[in-house]
Length: 72
Image (spheres, rainbow, N blue to C red):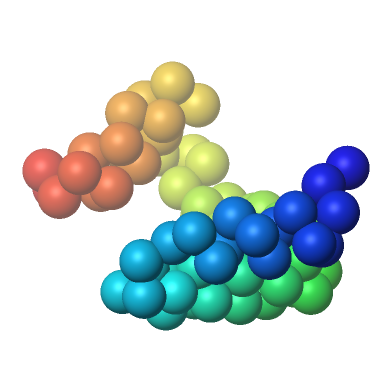
């Protein structure tokens, strides 16, 4: 693992205009780590239940792809 002194040395070698880039990236990494990963909720399950009698599962898959792509 890289020591903080080594990291500081590398940062000190950067031109001043890249300091902000490094700072932004570090903040991004810290923010990313703080966000908990939520398990899927499956809130959509059963949302197309009313179409059960109108389409087979394969037809419904094709219909959903059309809806997503804006074809229908």
